[in-house]
Amino acid sequence: MSTGPAGHTARSSDRPHSETARRTRLRRFLRTVDGVTIDAVYEPGNVVYDGGTPPSTASRDAAPAAGRPAIVVAHGFTGDLERPHVRRAASAFAQYGAVVTFSFRGHGASGGRSTVGDREVLDLAAAVAWARELGHTRVVTVGFSMGGSVVLRHAALYGPEHEGRTQARTDAVVSVSAPARWYYRGTAPMRRLHWLVTRPVGRAVGRVGLRTRIHHRDWDPVPLSPVESVPRIAPTPLLIVHGDRDGYFPVDHPRMLAAAAQDHAELWLEPGMGHAEHAADDALLSRIGAWAAAHAS
Image (cartoon, rainbow, N blue to C red):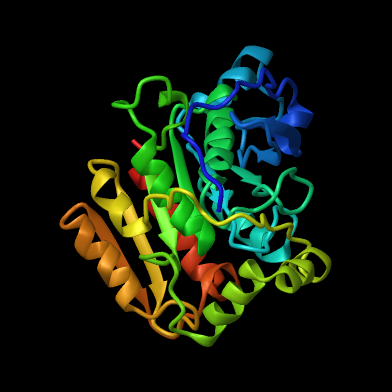
């Protein structure tokens, strides 16, 4: 798939400005540094105000930065921010902070075409930067499957040591059901996915049947792999979550990621869990949200 240098994202001036905005969605199209429009939604989470009267305008405007983190959700391949499984995850995370959901390029109402984990790091960077521009000083990225690989690469490529990219940095990372290495074809679902991505007829099926527009170009150069990214994330807190019945990526993938992180990551191998958002039950999503809130410092 095509690639290019990662950079900081263009800024948006949008801010929630009323009690109504606090309680409802704020939807914007963000623009990545390579010019792709990304459909994104901000939800303030389950904020409870004390007393019978709304807080003053000043206190409302300060609320996002006052302790609650923003959790940015990176969906899997063929998902988008309106899919039921993404909405379910967002609802669970809203118990622990504000939530930003977005659709990767080539998915949903976003522009461009999917590069299946390469330039998607720029989409995530735009969403993280938007969360900070809305006033959140603590941001956690949570990614599933393809999104799980993207949050790992994003954390490795954005940070205080990367001049000009700190607005899009993350304070903690959760990677769920992610591959450790590229080009894996060891399971039937992954062989079908490679057919979908690499064949013209497969891309047509993706566009018409799965509402996913896939780029026709091969990666050149090949992006940093998830397992190569993990050692570069420390000291940012990292949680790796994987099901022991994942039909796409067997458990050697999360174990490889955890080994690459050495002592700088937690690994949760979930008994009976399958793959990504669809397989993550409400209890697991709640545990992930609690971990995110506790580690976003």
